[in-house]
Image (cartoon, rainbow, N blue to C red; front, side, top):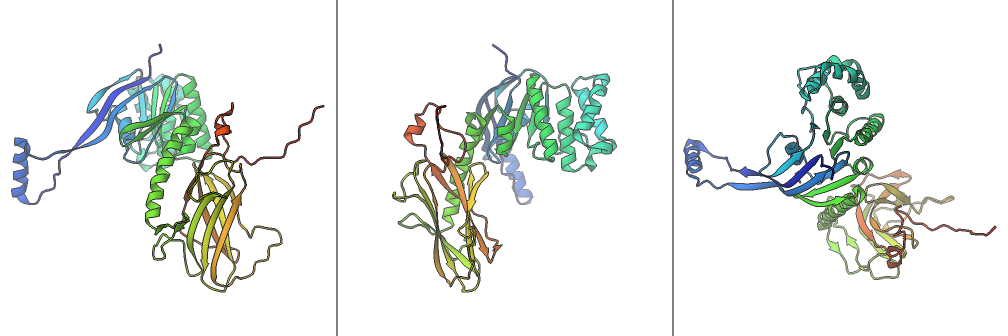
Length: 426
């Protein structure tokens, strides 16, 4: 059996919260005596709890989770920057890590000097570094700034050079913490190709990121850390979906708490006095509802259901033409469809009198695939968009039983709009 590049067993990391705040010399002395005698109350903050994980050679692993979940702490432990509280780590090979601005480079040295310094720390000879230096410089795009102290670099320049250096030097394992968020599209594509080449050559890459497309594109496996524990691991798209679904539900709970709640027909009612309510002197959003047509408002929505999305709007004045459109995005934030009643050839745009208007969009059966979707509205006045608080409202589509049992198990695309087919035997 092949020995893994990294093997983590029952790893935990905790910090003491010693509540050091004190007022006056007398209290400081009293706290010092309590420390010596062991009477001082000490709370423990558990950053990581019982983490067990194997990372194989040649694997590109993504680590995701909310801020404060313990992702960066895990990378710092793997980099031997901080020790674990308990548990063990076995590493087969040398490690290079880019854990943020300033990590890995000496600020007073030039970019070139830092290249040679890091190479020597990895045990590379000057001749080996000379052989890859031109490639490092070209990949980073730093140009003449290579002879400037890195403390004068922008964040993007620093991280481009750091990635270029550590991906070209002779390390077996590369740890990246939000590094690929910088750089333009050209650098992003070069980084993607370099990571793929590293994996093919047997190198191991671990990426911490909040960017779903980055993790799905680069990684062969993904680990979700939630409150210091491994909550899920496996296919990057499925793990990120788990993460985003939980995040959307939490955000939806916060969002709904800002309003008056739902009425008996399932409409989300918006509070007139709440700053989050989309409104101005021209209009006010009264309610929103998503439901399956010809079903109760709280019934599950299946792929085979026709769907209605309803917005109730108050137009506050007689002047101006009120326009409303609806955007639909998938779980990963990809804009997949939009429409508006005014988006029709020959539509005459006349001012409407003030009053309450109900806008309902209808989606035919098999329009959406199963999954979590987000919808938001766009308001226009006389052909110009009206700035409103940016809001998303989520809804779930459930897979029909016959689709779940199908040999192919369903299709991965967010839309399933059925086409007219003609099949003939020749």
